[in-house]
Image 1 (tube, one colour):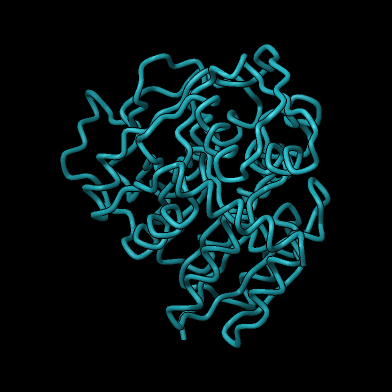
Image 2: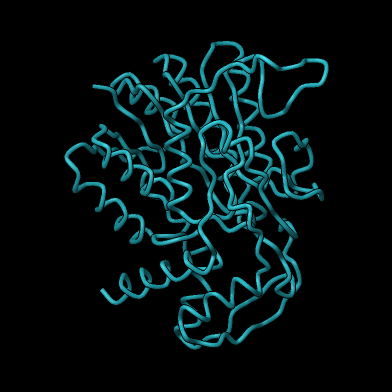
Length: 336
């Protein structure tokens, strides 16, 4: 039976994607190192949900451990790989760049080698909207150059895309990178704004609002992300027959390589996002307005036409609906 390897399975997106694969009756091997970047108890609670499924197997492994990853690939022999393990966070990368070098660069190299050795049918990996960095033209298109990252986290994600293309070109490994745009929803990350704001507001504490609340983000609901990821996973990358090396498209190639934005295409001002949280909680936030933090982009917005053309789907959940669902989960999870 074919097996899908999901790295970072105890993470926010990883758990949801693994659940969706299991619900389709697939065999999933999940790996995660359960690091302490944020509360491990939340990762363990996500993992507990997956362990209820008979089709799921878990191994606690670090993608940066070359010997362990080589052995894992030889033992599991996955048909497909969904690589979501990474050291996340733009701001943390400013203070702790070594963690990003280990997980996002060395770790990704180990994933590529494992996929090559086992002749994996498709590698889908997480990139990020952060790669657009200093670009000012919105919405961001896969046609845009992404040569000016403004955080080390973004630089590692750009590096992943380039590394993946080289393996697609040299070894014929079908690879697809997905540039996620500010994913939110139930079981989300505690370092993200929605989680921090909800927690503080329920405790009657002020919230830190950077960029004077005028930052713009293309907030993308987790269910839409999962739908897009699985559709892409089911459709391996192929060479672009229209690829023109005289005017190369950065998101495609003569190799079986693709890159897609996966965002909501409904950019939202941070103050409006906070208003949606206030409405869902029935609580007025006390706001501390602060300047933009180093490494933060002032605005993001996804052009999702390429994704819709490739798999017939693009995210579309309204922020008000998604925030309300998160708040309901948050209250139930922490009440329990």
